Amino acid sequence: MKKILSFIATGIFLFAAASITSAQDWKKTDPKMNHILADTTFLRATEAIIEPGEKSKQHTHPAAFFYALTDCKLRVHYSDGKTEDLDLKAGDSGCSGPERPHMTENTGNKQARFLLVELKEHPYKGTSKK
Image 1 (tube, one colour):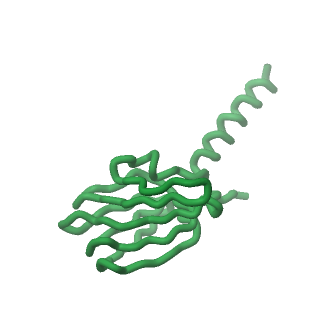
Image 2 (cartoon, helix red, strand yellow):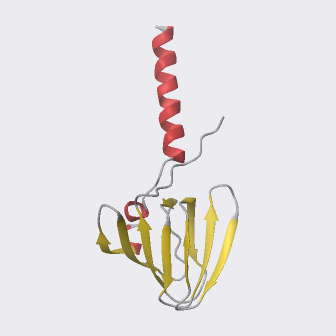
């Protein structure tokens, strides 16, 4: 009985740890912020819309390209406690590797809109703690 309880406890711990470090699809965590333009086996193109003062739920991204459709001010809150402020102008663009867990907040006074093209073949895989 002691071995069974230990096995169950280990299983619960591993499940909890996996859910913390695994990918959290923004399309699923905040569907109203995501207007899907294309969703194929290798990419997802989204028009992201975040209202002033609105903050997303925690999520991750695979490697991605973004293109700002409007001027906007965003604050990215990472799960490790770090933050990053972005002051984007319409037409700004960039790309990044897989993005660790974070929440995105519109700190500006107008709607933030940007195109996000995620590359599904390069997902966020989390970190393994040793």
